[in-house]
Length: 373
Image 1 (tube, rainbow, N blue to C red):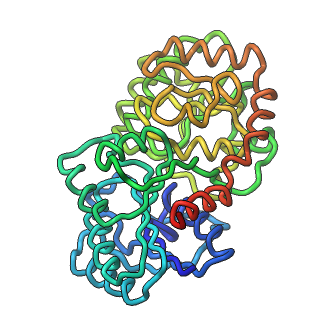
Image 2: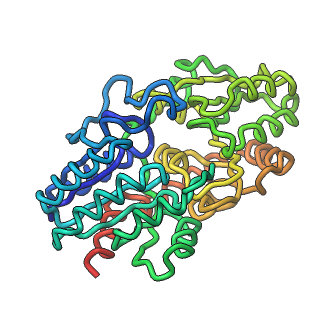
Image 3: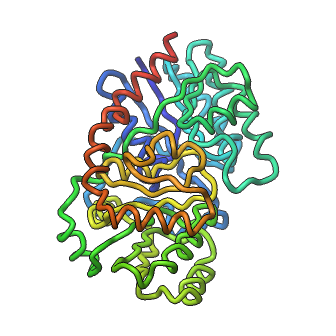
């Protein structure tokens, strides 16, 4: 089959780009695949980070056509006409926020006119966590040209059905992010990151308010004198950094929190996950999370709030613990239970037994079944 993928992809950074890379590598085993990515993903004034490009060494590079400009409608028409002429059997479009719906909708509508190409979108979210005016209008503009939908959690599926009750869709698990290299021993990882505590918790990824880092700080303040631990916070601030620094000082947890407040390059990710005993996701809202599937890739148990689709992947009492959102006391109790009852080995073994459910081959097979029905 001849396939084109539209997505953020190398040389752009982040989870969506990594997803596109791994999807390409699975599809290209049996198909002819092109990946089309952005030459301008966001205008600089809308981008909260320091760089939109992947950094670091030993990058997994895939061939990409760097063509799309998210804010130039003439570019959308040009790219759409080129792909229409190329006439792939399947156009796969990655959807994660409505900002990109106008470019995707325009391209999809043009390509669809060739009467050959099927249009499928993989939905990480339908409506974003941080809602803005026009989200639904933009999303519907894009979805009107889509024939098949892959949703990555039940909550995303529910949101899709609110917009399109009869959508041709399939719910598939978000596959693991297996592109960060092999894990290393805890001691090697901790030495590299200069971590001295007996117990290490990890909060990983871009720091946005909906991810509940403030709730986690309140939780660890309750146990700062009860056990020896360090909370590693690794990721670039996409929210007001000073607010979190002030909260650390107010709660007097400076000696319990170690900040790595830059984007973590691909080749460095393995050290953060290898170093920790447990990954903590104190989200206030979520649909699904790529961080969960990085943790699964490194066989790391998780303590998470029970929001969105997280409970579909994290099995309470088996591969981690689930607690109520915005409840520091419950989060504290789960952390203490995990460490005091030495749950790591048991949970790690359970995660390994679940690994087949999150393979890329399983994901692609499910996607193709939907298209071929």
